[in-house]
Length: 164
Image (tube, rainbow, N blue to C red):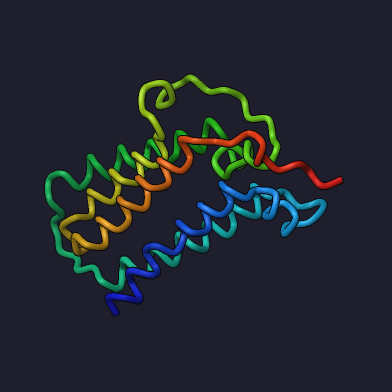
């Protein structure tokens, strides 16, 4: 079960890596008339479900949770919600890589926290340390840090062109 859970935990990261580096291939795969950010959102939600099931399969729950659980979970989810609220589907799901104009956002948490969506996810994961074995949390955190590194560099020449 451990290897299957580890594969499930890591499943979204190759998808995100490929989309970031080769967005034109994704636009062509989605086809004309389909929003690549929206389709990416659906695939990402499915992969998040696979991650959740993988983590749930190796977790052991107890009550009450440790004192740090609620603040880390609440602030982590707040950051994720705020990013989605400010950027919408296109901003959250690589719209800029698919040739969309995304407005520059300076409101909190942007301008204060670098990569707030990943920081929020990492905080939510750390909240679950007492429930989920450390090695799975570490795999996820390393995956998010890897994606932060990948997304910190953008080659403008690789942005996708819309299909006509």
